[in-house]
Amino acid sequence: MEQAQLTEARPYHHGDLRRALVDAGRRLLEVEGGASISLRAVAREAGVSPAAPYHHFRDKSELLDALAIEGWDQLAVQMRAALAEAATGRDRLVTLGVAYVQFAKMNPAIYRVMFDCSQSHESMPEKLRDEGAYRLVCDTLVESGIDPRDEVGLELAAVAIWCAAHGVAEMVGFKEFAPLQAHLGGEAAFLQAIFSQLDLFRPRSAVTAS
Amino acid sequence: MEQAQLTEARPYHHGDLRRALVDAGRRLLEVEGGASISLRAVAREAGVSPAAPYHHFRDKSELLDALAIEGWDQLAVQMRAALAEAATGRDRLVTLGVAYVQFAKMNPAIYRVMFDCSQSHESMPEKLRDEGAYRLVCDTLVESGIDPRDEVGLELAAVAIWCAAHGVAEMVGFKEFAPLQAHLGGEAAFLQAIFSQLDLFRPRSAVTAS
DNA sequence: AGCCAATCTTGACAACGATCAGATTATCCC
DNA sequence: GGGATAATCTGATCGTTGTCAAGATTGGCT
Image (cartoon, helix red, strand yellow):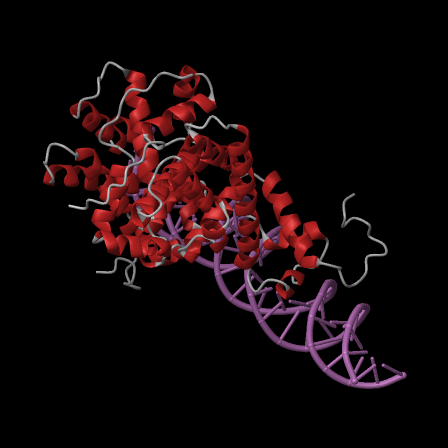
């Protein structure tokens, strides 16, 4: 089962080491809490020497990039699933936001890597815009009434939602919010309340810059 | 002027090394971009041996904590100043949000340390609640019409605002937003538009959890 | 078969966080 | 004042990390 513990008959050339390294990295991120991952540890987990990864990634950060991209994919899948389930028709945007935050909370280390990579590149991954979570938000926005021809308004609304979701995702773990969360009857209700506060599901095209 | 470059007559006991270390750390954070700060580099900058800091901080993370606390103080000062200037009476909450984001953008490394420390402690620094930026938000919320006796509603609104501000602070640097920002006429207008989207200045007490 | 390029290992280097014994100095008690 | 005691700083050291260069091993192409 452990693909690296055979100790015998391990061919000198690992069939697809790149794939194995990314998987090992994901395994380590799931286990180890919020600590920073170590390239050597990933190689160790994959059962290769500490220098082997450098034949598949120029840098440590390039490995992290690969992990981040898979994370964004996974997030999009989960958001799509949430949207498919809750077909309430009205607050689908809130559903998206809650799914986003819950992903971040259930995979904190991966989410951190995702966002750190984005920030170091000063841009979000391309796939996000084309077929990922960002596109999902835009579609849901249009579907919920915003004018698709008002590109600025649409983008502004999407960006605002994304900011709110990211902010909530990183703040929701604070101990200070535990009593409030309990008072509202659980995490889901807490998230819904916050997103309602932010009025996410009734965006207007406020392009009137003073 | 440089307090560590005298090379002569430097007494064995550095008058207040703790203070000097924090200052050195802040200097390094200002210069060095988003990279992780090195404890040894801080000691070097302060002109002491690599082991000296361990007599004032148990850990590297404890030094970062000290830096973070000063950062939160600085943020509160800046927000207070922004509030004092723009006495428009209406959208003071937006003013606060914009000040928050601009601090984060002008001190990205410090802001990151601030938030990382908070996250590793799973709580925000205490001073924030008592006399810091959080209190400022609550006061402005009350001042702008929310019922101060509705503790849950007040906290919910403050938390929501904080989440939004943090989210915007970390997303606003993305290249993808540059055209939108230009189209709206600069960063300030962009931030105001986003905060308007989030309806921050007209919060309602939405304690109705389904 | 034979060669080339891709792949993996070994060994090494500098930098880091952390610890410990020892040097140096301040402080306090008599 | 003088000497003990605690605080502070240095030096050396350990284990770990990211990264590189040189050599071993192998798959694929002719």
